[in-house]
Length: 452
Ligand SMILES: Nc1ncnc2c1ncn2[C@@H]1O[C@H](COP(=O)(O)OP(=O)(O)OP(=O)(O)O)[C@@H](O)[C@H]1O
Ligand SMILES: [Mg+2]
Image (cartoon, rainbow, N blue to C red):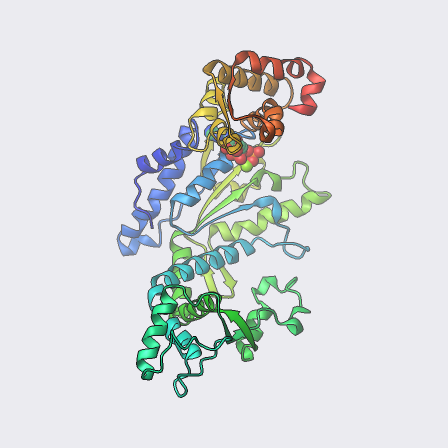
């Protein structure tokens, strides 16, 4: 669990997202509240429910981006999913409970990787011993299972222990990497089981492969593989063996229940305006299915039952033609915090182009630099791009900062195409260049509808 204070969370988000301070503050508070709850008196802990949030704002102003950055920052179990992906229980498709199962799965895997990382050295040491056993069966030390017989110079007939140490040194120095060794390798695919598909079984969280994998001994096959690859396999196998999966699963479930965060993107897509007919019926169904999960219920997963009472939900949507009040009332009540994101101004666009750590201008500059061409943007060029973005957004469709992507691509098209054949040079992009490339299109509304 990260100990970041709200102000630190906002500061981190500031590195990538321009403006939207209210939204940043809300998610930062919600995140910190998890930390606070953990320290609250025991008798209250269970009573403190997360305050779910809806982020509302026009398209392309940073809603999804906030979620993406948040997920990298917090070490709470975090899962982002599009609400529009779900279908009502009983219909073909993913039911909403699958997001809890996915969150648990993700968390188990993340914890497993972390644990394996922690035992890596130990696993590596065991793998080394096993490899030496393979290379040098203890009873006949002189007849290793190396494909080519051991070089008599490298392996003088010394007592076995001595030879083993010499081999170890060679192994560690990578001198044996290219040799082949016979090894039992687990068959990755089990064709007979492959016939079953998991479709339809998903509700139960049952995976046939996992089931059978446990029932039957793993099919193995003797294969010749390079020592370097064999070492990797052995180390991996040993790492898996060293990790106590029962504990990992227990910890993962606990972590999900206490600190899980689900980002429900595109929640407005499950609102049907004239509910009662057509696909809208199913959308309302999805909302109704969501209720118990958001409110707190128990979802069965293949790792056991998971309680959702304390999982934080952050929903987001453009709410373009509809309002949050079009959500079914019960659901509205479960998202008490509403935050509106601002539309982006020309000044925001200038900053988005230049300030974030992954700013577009930077991305293009580095991309083109790989061809030996340096592009430079004058401040005046950036102002123009931002201006045109605002202009096109207002005259055609407002797609927010995404407009900058289409504009930049158009602006740099020639350079992107020709760069491999251009002599190493510096290209300065100034306002005049921007006007030349974009003005005609911009002034022609039909054209800009299609191109920009
Ligand atoms: N405030 C911002 N600061 C920096 N970049 C932004 C900002 N808003 C949007 N962007 C950029 O614009 C693109 C689209 O933003 P994002 O995916 O967050 O849109 P959204 O608000 O989720 O829209 P939608 O409602 O269509 O899903 C991203 O590449 C993002 O980097
Ligand atoms: Mg989005």
